[in-house]
Amino acid sequence: MILLAIESSCDETAAALLEVAPHQELPTTLVLSDVVASQIEEHAPYGGVVPELASRRHLTAILPVIRRALAAAGRTLDDVEALAVTAGPGLVGSLLIGIQVAKAIAHAKHLPLVGVNHLAAHLLSSHLQRKAGPSPAPSFPYVGLVASGGHTALYAVWGMERFAQLATTRDDAAGEAFDKVGKLLGLPYPGGPAIDAAADGIEPGDLRFPRGLDRKDTLDFSFSGLKTAVADHLRARREPPDHDEVRRVAAAFQESVVASLVKKALLACQRLDIPRLTLGGGVAANGGLRRSMAEACRAAGVELFLPARSDCTDNAAMVGLAAVPRLRRGEEDGGSLGARSSWPIG
Ligand code: KG4
Ligand code: ZN
Image (tube, rainbow, N blue to C red; front, side):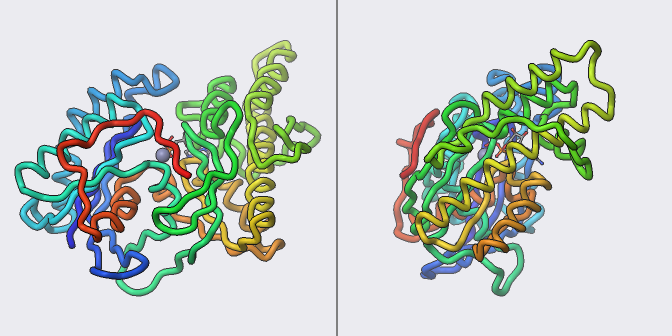
């Protein structure tokens, strides 16, 4: 089955073509093409995603992105046999662009269309396969950490469609904290990759910021106190931070976020007695997090499945993958599919 997947839940317009092998328990799903058009430049002057701007940009980007995905796979729309689109959670105006285009193609070509939960897609992204032949993917159950701009949560992933939320953030998402602190430090938007680069190879020395809910008997996260601590630290200085101080603060902030994510993720594996962990969401692209998580997992005997960095940030390939079980059962949402700003799983 050739599957066209579309993602437009936030500020990336993405389309992917996947080849899905029939009747497999785990989807033997090959990514034929994967195109992402970023809107970073449009939103950068505002220091965050402007929803109205995002939907207008999706509108102009979506058809060229789909055409590029088809061309990169050497296919045409006539080869497509099914459609998947992110239906939530996300910005409703943005989601609706992807949904309407997917509906129009499904209607015109008489193809099945299913709506996909964006969080489920992030949790399954370690199963993406880019070349024929076996590639390492976690067996079920595993613990999944999603850390993105809108969400930071831990899940038990029991199967491709069975998730149980174990913990979430009580305030800001990790990516949101990266973006806000990036702004405080005068770094370019988005703060996540900018802080990652600024912190690279830097030892923060004795500068240490608090770790939210560190000693509490909970798997939940908290990042707003950390952001305030960084703001207070910067305010207490007489002059704006110079280059070295920016890098030192970035490193200390990142260390604090990473320490929380690593500690709680491993605690979840331990509590559930599940020695397998995956990461997803934009923050999972963070170099410091990937290094620390790998070290901690090795020490704890937990097998870590790290998707490629480009599979951590928003993309349509993961959306197609998450749609496979329903499409295989012959299910479809068709014309009744709507956008959901909030859509908890598990
Ligand atoms: O998953 P994603 O692409 O979109 C959402 O679903 O939110 O995540 C975007 C978030 C942004 O907050 C961005 O700053 C953060 O992920 N991010 C990073 C890195 N790359 C993206 N955070 C830390 N380090 C990175 N390398
Ligand atoms: Zn995302």
